Image (cartoon, rainbow, N blue to C red):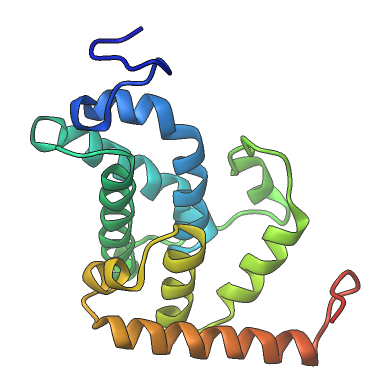
Amino acid sequence: MGRGSGDDGRVPPERASLRELIDAGFSSLHGDLVRYLGAIAGADAAEDIASQVWLEVVGRESAFRGDETALRRLAFATARRRALDHRRRWWQRAVTLHPPGDRALERAAPDEPYDVGRDRALDRIARLPRSQAEVVLLRVMAGFSAEEVAQMTGRTPGAVRVLQHRALRRLADDMRRDPEPDDRM
């Protein structure tokens, strides 16, 4: 039992340190961050950016106050800023040539079981305009409210809802036009 533990053995959120929250929720939060970053910044850069995000989040330990939701908000807001920085630096990258098939060896092994449905959904979401994809990922995958997404992206809650509506309508139209073998309407 930790300090200030309740009957269930968990530390009350108002007393939890950032390290305790990260220890408790890293595995699920990291997977969501990598998927979000893969859709926003590209799959090949997602792991690198996620590691930068965790370094920055841990570096804020002394100033952090909050619970699991606050940690999630901090991690995704940091991930969004890091992804934007990554896209702004695209012109500074050197070109590296790889032989065909070589890139598969550089990818990190997945921590969780392979989910074909989730991967198909992420592929479809990645085809959306960046602003729509970002809103859908933050609202659906990360579980943020329209107000939280608006604050993170610098939009109004109404604009977030409109982007989400347009994205979901576009995804539905895409699925009607091009159903995959396992997609049944």
